[in-house]
Length: 495
Image: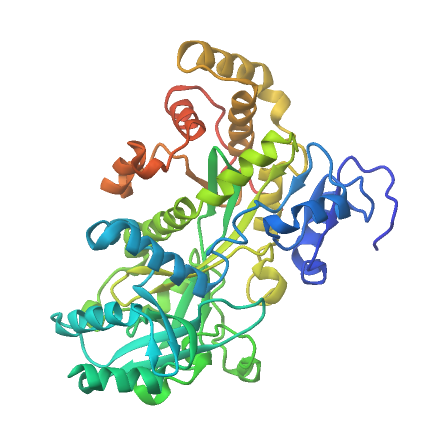
């Protein structure tokens, strides 16, 4: 029961906007960890929906959060292009235009090819010419079967709004400029749209399209620290997959999975038993890809090929969209607003029949999959583990290695790289988080193991290409490569 004043609690939490959606998973996890709820300004953790920079002063005054608070907002991400699937497409367009076609194949490959198109009456934007050129080249590629499928989404949308349309681009539509213009006028409504290549041949689970949702946690923007849960959550359609043009209007087959607005009526069509995670044996028993690879071992393929793509592409998007959050982070630190900001991420991926992973959404609104789908995904232990890693319970194991950690940081800063007080605090936080990891949470950035899967992309990042690494990133990277730190708590489980 919520009370205005809480007694005998060393740690307290407060729910922000969207709190009615956070009761089932987030509030319950806090309580199970012994953290008490309050509506006063004496909270240690504020967890609600993300807000953008324009709302920062109002939120600061409204919630009166204090020095040392944990706050689940990193300003700059909400008002960048990562918080909606259409935003991801816009970010990809900007990345491709900036990098050019050759570099875009490496740097912008986190999602499928996208274009921004505006149609006002018979007038269309210049993006249509690039879209036509790309479609022609794709249609001529060996092994590509027509028609091509494209998904259309609003370039900008308000929270909760929904417009998605999948359209077919046939051979006759590409035969001439006149045919293509007619297709544009019929297929694309007036307005501002993102049009993105659709995966026609997805991975299936018991003959139904399956996407997966990963869980990520950004615990610092500078230096960048990112963690990922080592298993994702399958989102299985309620309809058997049918890639024909007659079924393109069935959003419950193609887009809204496993259930959602407009698809709840088909809840009785959910697969049973439902696969709870990509860590489960059940998931790998029933997934299928390319028919020519019937004998593929999907357990091995997932671990060696699919999962590394999910890790890499999550990081690519974060690095690509970090510019504005870094600017605002400097303003916040300059104003000495000493709070630990974090960002809970839920990236969605579609997996094609050959095992290629393509991000289709990056939710960053602070909500958890257990809020909406608790009956399908039992993830309370993973939720609590994320909170412990964040420091919600105060890093209880820290006294065990405190003296050794102080000495190690002191040696590093005197012998390897000079550090100021802020640097030393960031290095200590890295160690605390790693020591308190459990339940499958894994640090993916910075990581001494990046080069195993990243190849030339890792080389570009380590060389500071495109100024992707800050001085603090490089310092942290040097620390994890050269300095003692206690073993992480990965073999421990919060329950």
